[in-house]
Length: 243
Image (cartoon, rainbow, N blue to C red; front, top):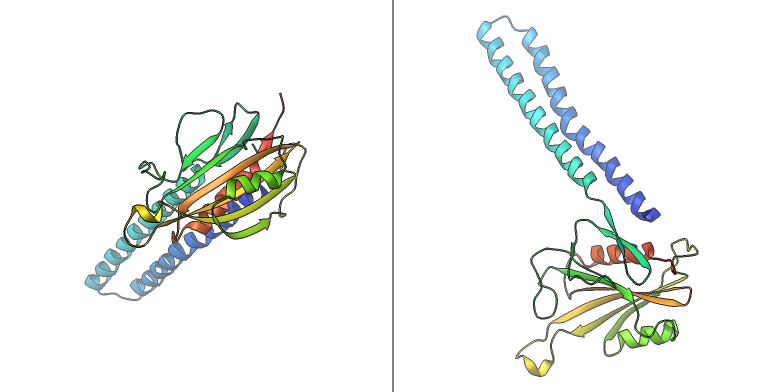
């Protein structure tokens, strides 16, 4: 499946930044080596000459190690792509290969940001979960009714219509985001402050069918915006092909 344009642009920018990083590391080192060579030629004393040659050799080794290290980072970054998931419900999405499948159902996608497992509420601290599935009651209910059903009981933090994408015949004709906050456990069940979970939900309609992409993370997670961007790109990648 073809990734969305903003994801491709992000990868291109990352490639551009990589070239800058390589130049910033390697170029000053070779400039230093050139200066050392010039200074070495101006001295006739054998001891000084040998000492500077030794320093130049060391700098060349450091340069090689730095270059190899950068190349390994670039290679690892390039290898991390996106996988395709094909549901038994006739829809497909793309998701990051660095995330981990959770569960074995073929009806929908369920992935975790780490492979350390889940706790009683589904995710551990500093972990996120993304689920994609066809909404219950679809296509009999309207998109607004679907949104009300899945966000009921939560404190709404944000409502937003996503418009920065090109809809196709099999992609989301309408895509809406709703962010809500819910108690992780009932207040009466624990003493002290109640922890909260943030749900960033993306609701999609394709040919009358409604699909939900749900991101779940703990309130206060510093990577929430990154998780939300990933969830949005997953929702944008959704394609529905009736059989």
